[in-house]
Figure 1 (cartoon, rainbow, N blue to C red):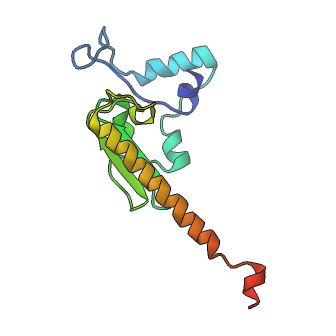
Figure 2: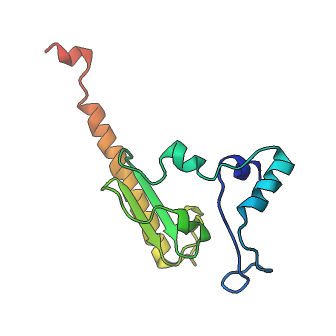
Figure 3: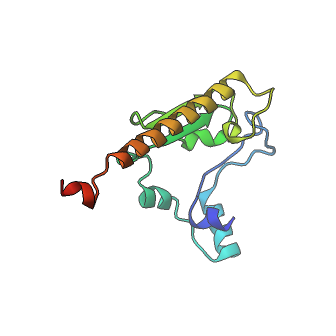
Length: 145
């Protein structure tokens, strides 16, 4: 609750019809702000994360796989399009929140299994690229040759 009030303001609402929550609760920033002030003595900063971390400006990022499950309500805030060959977005049509990060199970959907393997392939490639970089790194000893 405190982190939501200070860093991670995420406007959620429910309508009781298109989700599993009832009764319907529309998001109300004014009411949420009042609750944060009463509970924690802080005022939410709805855009702090975007300002602090650059939102979805990922031009300088490398070696990230963003996975998003279509059954995950958090997907709306996720990175859903690949930015570069080393910053990739994977969509898991039958995936829920962090399903690809959970332990494997025989009943996992085939797409989840494939996404896990794709994630591993990216990580293996990044590790191999880094190892190659280290092998070819100029050291004080080789710089004098």
